[in-house]
Image (tube, rainbow, N blue to C red; front, side, top):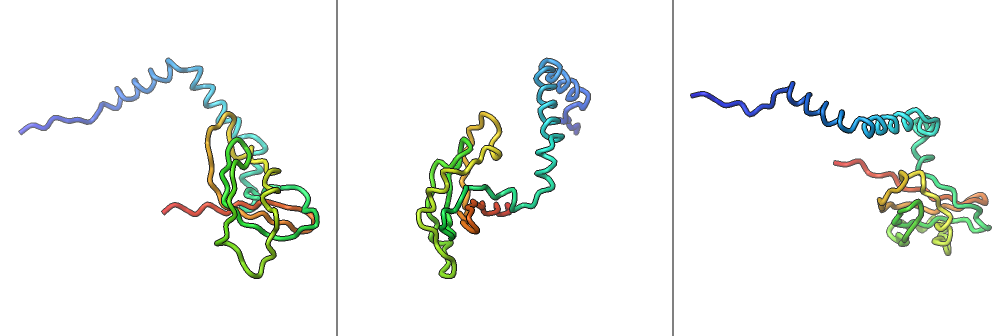
Length: 146
């Protein structure tokens, strides 16, 4: 009994791949140039060396004399908070709650999380934390996938 092989010829696969990219050479080179620019930018290098919490912390401006913490679930798109819901399950009796915390979220600038012209929407949890005269939004870490 003779078996027919269904495996593809590696040379043929390479030639098909080469033809595909040869026909789109400018787009392919532009794509590689964009990747290279991001990898070698000072911002990307600094981000790779930054502390994880610093990457998840966004300044919201002055506290206005109101210290406290308020947990939220956020819908983020276009570099800003589109919607927010207070997260009552994260409240602690030992932590001072922050009245009108949602007003601080309007100052959040999330443009660093989105590439230009992105249509992505992110759902994240986080805390508005007002302390020492300043307010920050600290996004909760994303749990590792299982």
